[in-house]
Amino acid sequence: QGLHRNIAEVGSKSVLFVCLGNICRSPIAEAVFRKLVTDENVSDNWAIDSSAVSDWNVGRPPDSRAVSCLRNHGISTAHKARQITREDFATFDYILCMDESNLRDLNRKSNQVKNCKAKIELLGSYDPQKQLIIEDPYYGNDSDFEVVYQQCLRCCKAFLEKTH
Ligand SMILES: *[C@@H]1O[C@H](CO)[C@@H](O)[C@H](O)[C@H]1NC(C)=O
Ligand SMILES: *[C@@H]1O[C@H](CO)[C@@H](O)[C@H](O)[C@H]1NC(C)=O
Image (cartoon, rainbow, N blue to C red; front, top):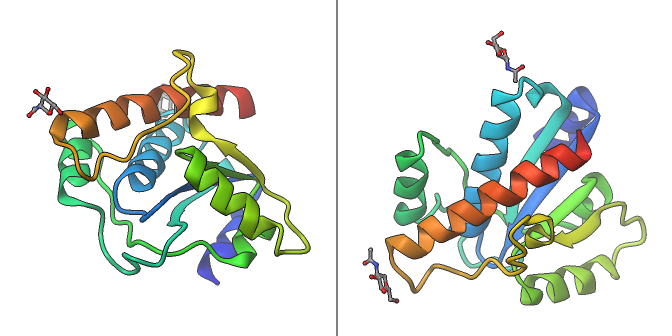
């Protein structure tokens, strides 16, 4: 409910980053995008959040490796994992996800809501280096998290430029 009020107030644009569990990739993307719009002094124009396709990690903070990766780049996050809701599809302008599996799940869910407004896309479709898929680093190591961070940074920059 708080989020919807937020969107109405700050109003102009909104983006929801989505991955499987909302503890690695999507909270990184959310935090990176928040930092970018803050640095550009346009944070008032944006409502930004992240969520999961699954309900596995609801209420949990991001993976400690995601938190330390962000911290290495001077970014913090206070996100708690949540699952995407039907309302999200009607509320957000953009829903940006990480891989083909996310995309399939989101398209299936969006077909079950009548008033889907969101444009559902792969975040990687904005990558100037054309890395379409942002792979799940959960079973990887710190360098896999760094790769995710760099992909998110490139894509979020390009997305922000396009939607400016
Ligand atoms: C954002 O605002 C700060 C403080 O007013 C200013 O120093 C900075 O240059 C601005 N950044 C951009 C990208 O406009
Ligand atoms: C991470 O794992 C890859 C192999 O999957 C390895 O090549 C790389 O050296 C590892 N990096 C770190 C920082 O441990």
